[in-house]
Length: 481
Ligand code: ADP
Image (tube, rainbow, N blue to C red; front, side, top):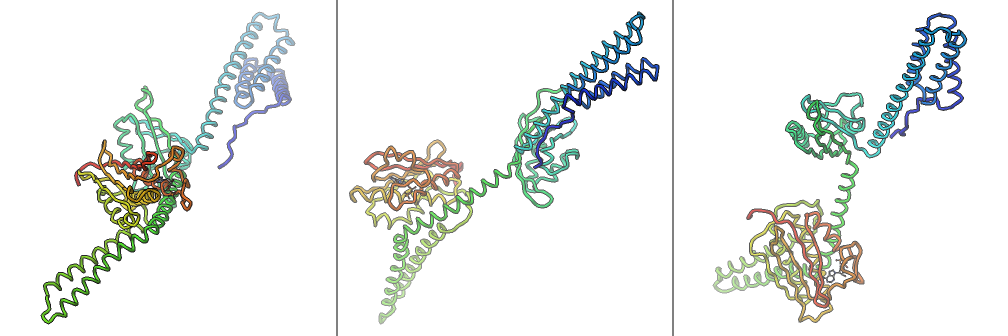
């Protein structure tokens, strides 16, 4: 980015001012003595003042004007014009008009300087903030843009902006967004806002955000003024953050699965043992002097359904351990909860935890990434089990409830563990907060980022000595199925 500078068109030193004033004075004296055109010299004074106002600083312009007035007075005295009434009148007229013109020239110069400075500041601020300005004149289908907007769209500043040029840079998949903005412009909408991608000729993608409002009633028609922001850097860092969050979530998910290894082994072992038992039974029915084919068939059916159960467990685990970009889909809230519970049955019984489940009677759907939501529920259940290891096994009860409240699908995981202290409560969801000797403190922080990705809320409450309650609320989707 080239450095920003204020234009310096003026000579600033007093010595230079004096020199130029003297030069001007000598030039006019010489001109006056070698020609005898009095009108021409007056015009010359005025021209000199106006020209110097264009080129020099205010101080220099005053010097030039004073030099002209001095020369005028010098000639008036030397030529003894004061003896002639007509010449006195002409001299006074000349002095007054020269002074008035100098005053006006200085005023317009100051205004032009202020305007130029403001423009330089504006261009500088636009360049630094990467925000350009844009204007639409609706009745004449005209578009204006600032140098920064031209730079964002990667057009030369000299090129005249047009709808076609904007569309030519718009990403083909986002064209409909831009076209709908042009449509809103023609309908005089009170506010325009769009975020879309640009595709540069070399294939680079940029993200821009445009906001525009109508200008207060203009005598020359309906006009919008807006800001165009280059938000590429922000979008790219959001994407990178999203990627790292999903990778972190994957790592902790696999860690949770590791913690459930015994449970998972048990879940797979059970149907395998059932298959073996049914197989042995099959042998016995076949080894009879008169094989009982009916019983054989029943045993084979049992084997098939047990192997289905085993593959179902494997499918659940494979789904949970996969690493993919989170994708929200319409999912049954209760189904996600029961699917997760199926994975932890053995873990609960191993920890002597009694499970009470109350699922919403009315089926409720949420827009969720199934795997991520299961990860949250899994994490809350594992934490609950760990919190109950220190209490009497007879009182280890885990209650899971789902219901709908104010268009939100709510899940509550309530345990009877040690509870959460008032000091720990505000930090629970902070990364690396843990009270466990071997804890990492990332579980709840990841749960929160997952729930926020789902536009939901997660919170915890504690009844000291009576356990903890973790709740999540997700926007419920409308419609039955
Ligand atoms: P970690 O389990 O590695 O400590 P988490 O982020 O899952 O990380 O949990 C952070 C902390 O929150 C835990 O160390 C514990 O102090 C507290 N906590 C979480 N769940 C419960 C619970 N059900 N009962 C009591 N405290 C809990």
